[in-house]
Length: 68
Ligand code: SF4
Image 1 (cartoon, rainbow, N blue to C red):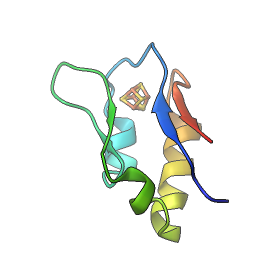
Image 2: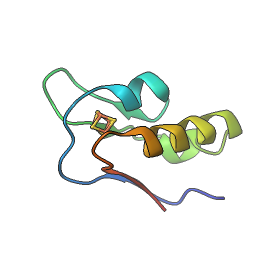
Image 3: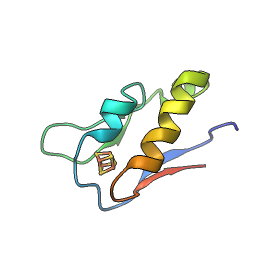
Image 4: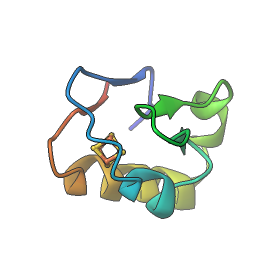
């Protein structure tokens, strides 16, 4: 699947799990909500990163990671 867009809906609890699982795509600044890195779509073309992205999406405790 080609990833066209990655975004975070409202409700991130800054748990840092997504950055732990997939630091190529996610960054959680101290005390702030998660941000998707600027080159995330390019990074997601690598199969290993795409796999980590999917893991983060499914494991986010509040299910706010969206991928299309
Ligand atoms: S895993 Fe979900 S709740 Fe945790 S920092 Fe990432 S987006 Fe936020």
